[in-house]
Image (tube, rainbow, N blue to C red; front, side, top):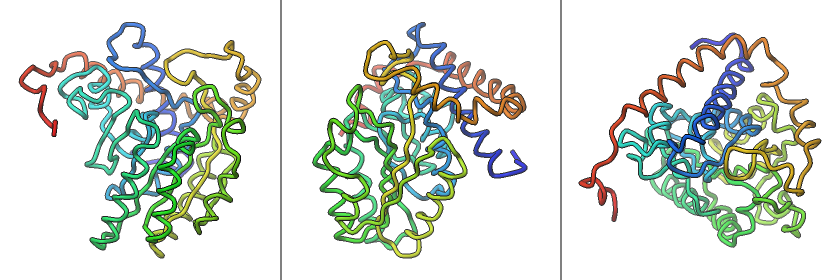
Amino acid sequence: MNFPSLYEELFYQALRIRLVEEKVIELYPSDKIQSPVHLSIGQEAVAVGTCHSLQSTDLLFCSYRSHAFYLAKGGDLRQMFAELYGKATGCCQGKGGSMHLAAPEVGLMGASAVVASTIPHAVGAALAAQYLRKDQVIVAAFGDGAMDEGVYHESLNFAALHKLPMIFLFENNSLAVHSWVEARHSFSTLEHARSYGLPAVHVANGYDFLRVHEAFLAIVTEVRKNRSPHLIEIQTFRYKEHVGVGEDYDAGYRTYKELEDWQAKDPLILNQELVAKYRSAILSEIDDAVQFAETSPWPGREHLLEDVI
């Protein structure tokens, strides 16, 4: 599809992610989706603004909140819905579900339900890229909860020590489930990364596709040139509950006003002209993907131990 501007292309990609997840919300009560889901509604600009600067040969490792990164990196929508349904035609043959999406053919190397566990995998891939002299940028995408884990700190140290061609992409929605970052971190994210020698950048307006893209593109360009690690922190806000398809503003740990403040700046809400322009085509694509999942076969018993090492 040809777009008249970069903004419109990023808008389309973000709208596609939101409409996909709104379909997930619609389907979830039917129990056709065979795993818990962690939605990226409100955080779409982070995925589309960063992945646009990556090539298919660049590798991205992400967390269980993976729908947005999977789609932004180029993962197949039919295979995604089939995976959510637990069908054999899913991107992981129905064995992974929402929290373990993967599309290695486009460089999405996998998500994991274990907090912070894909960060060292990304570091290992960056070490391999360096050793094999591959022209690759490796990205580890994670939330603030991952920074509570020791492996995050070890990974920063190792990547800096060995000057690996990777980017630590910190998608900061300020919450680990219900716990605010201020209650868990005694350190500054940026200063902590800089103490290991990593250049570190903060993007406050994580709803702005172009600002995210501009900041990330500058880092990707630098990493391709100098083959050394960087960190970028992008402030964002998740609209839905930590896990599931509902809202949790009655839980007492955050207020509805905080949501309204972010929605007041959300392009997918403000620009209804572009929403109307692309909504119908995206919904048709989603309906096709859901129908594919509905009619796909279940994995058989004979496939139970395939890919198990």
